[in-house]
Image 1: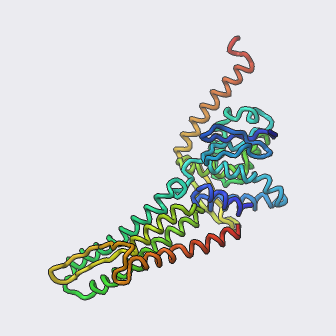
Image 2: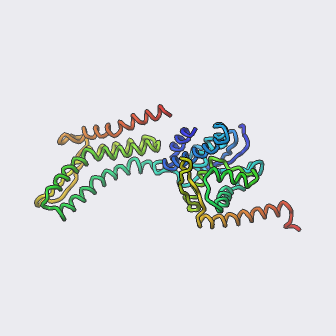
Length: 155
Length: 212
């Protein structure tokens, strides 16, 4: 079996499978998928995407905390702020946005810009609370990783 | 690519409204990307069709009722729709006529229309609604055919009685044996209903298959 660079994994009732840059390996028969929607270029997301669960939501909520944005603007902003290290899949950001909106974390409004209908997303109070929780989790995780990396816990 | 994506998402059972919004946002995104890049580069940045489909299917609550329970939306739902569609307007007419217009003529005209509509029009309209849902959501044909047969059978055998005068004030329904013919109805009506319900489905489905 030829495998390309891993960009995510799908899970379905019969197990899991890798998704690579050459395509999906063994498409599942079921229609229940769970996908990870972003990649951190050249880092651990390639080998262990579990570590990155919740990060796309965290980044999206954090960026939208400051002001409302539309999808393209949001993707560009995350890319820019991460020093071009984090690249959220541009098309796959929308299902994440829709999911966050359905769960009440985001609100959206349509606006006409240059004759085009554009959807702007903004953080709700519920989203702000979710951001706080995700930030805490991620901070604790990154602190723990740093401790392991530096060996500080043994010092 | 976006047309293909629309078809794939609909076939995977994603709600048409969700698909429409997703594609509108992707088109808008492509337009933004296209301001500084070629179309090919923009499509590459947008992501592969597999990735776009998987990202949508990963979200909870995006699959339609028709995808999750086709028996409910294409068979049971239309059948119940037909039953309540017959019963509720007739009940409303009966109560309205009894309370407010017992001696008026207009309830009789409405009753005549209602009887004709319930016996001849409603089965076909409900069947077409199921056909519309099935086509719009790219559903398989098994449950639609089941629903259409049930509606055609019930519609073919249905006789409605409404009496808004005298001692027998009231209404009732009777379903004839669908395989005998009484008053020029029943079996022939059932076949007629079935053909009229399914003919647009056959034509439109063939057309959609050709254009896919």
